[in-house]
Amino acid sequence: MEYEKLIYTNERGESVEFSTASIYHCNVSKDVDGIAGVTNVLYSTNSMGQHGDTYVGQRIEARDIDITGHINAKDKAQAYELRRSLLKVLNPELSGTLAYEFGGFKRVINCRLHGEPKLERKSVLIEFTIPLDCLNPFWREEDEQKEDIASWVAAWEFPCEIEKDNPESMIFGYRAESVIVDCYNEGDVSTGMRVRFTALGTVTNPILLNVDTGEFLKLNVTMQTGDVIEINTQYGSKGATLTRDGEKTDYFRYVDVDSTFMQLEIGDNNFRYDAESGVNSMEVSIFYNKEYLGV
Image: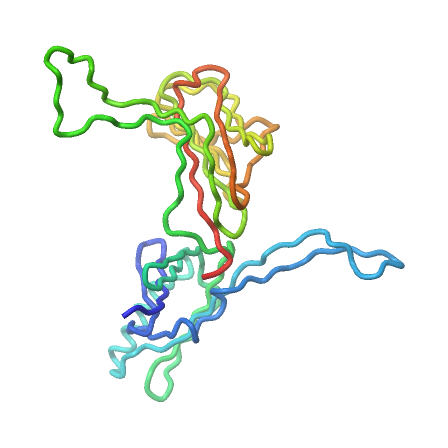
């Protein structure tokens, strides 16, 4: 039988399920507020003699989610043990994620406990109200989308046959060079991305160009073999990091001053890569989440 459920998981991996089938009973469609809509705020200006206001901009506020239900245990000792377990998972010092599931449909959102969870024993059962604050108000798919612009594709398969008279005919891999890749954002809002440059040889000043807008991300560096530089354009997480020989270094200062921390707009986003030298010794990948206004 399919039923709606919410699963809260803290950063230690401890989780609890809220649903009609869980010991922490909750009818998601009736007893949960804040999972569907968002609050939009408009900014405007006006002047003397003007009728009405002039639109300036808008923003979507953080999302508040309140989960209400009861611990489905009549035995007092068992109920209090379940209450202690719930409070342990809902540690306010730990960040967490909330997953919504219904059949094969799943969405995830980052959240933290906001205020005090209320757990009160009524006539028979312990009832709870859990307030969660989602600073990023958008739901996302569980797995990141990945688009490779330039990468090596493995071509070695088993069983393996090597021609006796022509051993050099065997291809272990080949370079897939997509000059332009389309990162299609089918979400409800624009979203940031992670751009990963991987050097297979010496690469000078790698760049990622948005073909549609002319915006670009450029690094004023010379990458060594094995270097991986990752640029994050997500609000609140913007930056650049170099990974070399297993060690990470902040590389934000090497991002060209004319670069734009581009967002993926709704729909098509076409990108191409380049470098001043060593372009054929570079792999480029783009990672992003499709974000949604509700579930």
